[in-house]
Image (cartoon, rainbow, N blue to C red; front, side):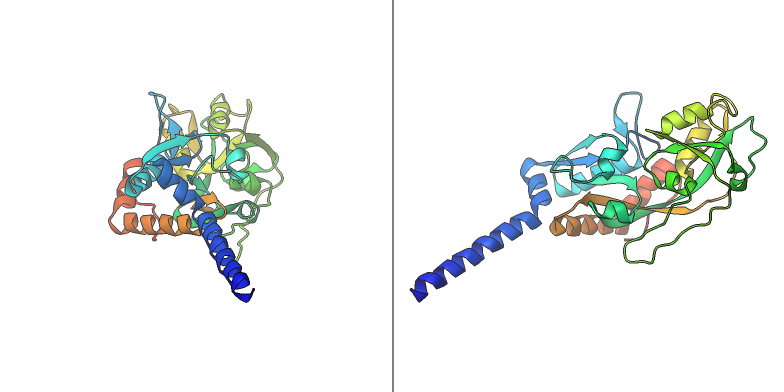
Length: 280
């Protein structure tokens, strides 16, 4: 009787261990079994991720994710649902990784795991080139200001932003402006299209990351300009669905190798003209 119970305990322990191990490596196991890495990202965030003239999703983030797939020895696939769906977490196996310029927040950390920081992005104000009243962030009070919904830029304009980096104390930036009317957009593309229609026609200004704004200003044909220094610096992290520490460890391992051998620097210089990669 004792032997029988002991056997049950051993078998039960082994089964529990097997189940725990399978759960711990669920995402990584799926990637290696299916021989494909599924990246999820924004479709309108140049030069990090956007749809080119050929209808393909390209950019800084996409190249990094593609390199991760290469180093895993698997194929690469990218999908572009709405930003709100990405940040809602609970991906349930639809996507494997978000190398998608996401900043960590306490709210997002409830449903996603932030694995490692891979670059930082300063936020700036942009206006129509005909604007003469907004010379700095201090002049935004009472204005209609566009930004992508569900981003730190929206929180900043609402004076609710807290920069939360895993392992560090939260930091609240200064908000040196009066109340603004925040106009959230599904994508930055639409916000900057409205800004380009004319000064004050739909928007008085827009707030976004410097690197994407600089790209839009360059391609605007003189319709847009940047008017202020850095508002705050946004740390961007790799995000994954919760529950797979083995996958998280593998991501850190690959990113360290890419940083050490110069791959992150090369990709960065290709897309933004300088090395913005964070040390791994």
